[in-house]
Length: 196
Image (cartoon, rainbow, N blue to C red):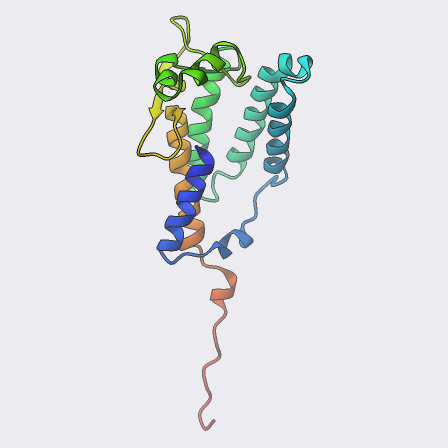
């Protein structure tokens, strides 16, 4: 849902006559962390079913990714209020996963609303980042318990943390696209001199 939120935020930014130029002037602290985490997560998803040792280590690896990601967001929290809201959403997801073996609990009832095959895949452990929500699940209400169906174009189950994350992303992108004063716009044209 995060990628959906980014696309919607950019579209709204354009509708508000904003520009992507603001992203060129962003300067993150420890900015190398985000692309590195993205690559690692993609690699885990790609190979956890192929190599058993990656599958076994996927839960602690995901926890490590969350910890480093939270650190990155905290370091940059003063840049934009959207980042702090994003931090809160990620933190909520991290807490519920940390308390449940490094997996995001998923409601089978909600998953069945979307697609019984998806629910069956979760039960069979085909989604390494997820686990079935049970009576023993700690803080179950922070898990993936909210089904999204039509008219939304892509059926999925999300968490409260996901919603807060997308609000943070939306605000962040709006402020960058619409609110940011780019250096180029601060260059003043010299006033015409008299007699010219």
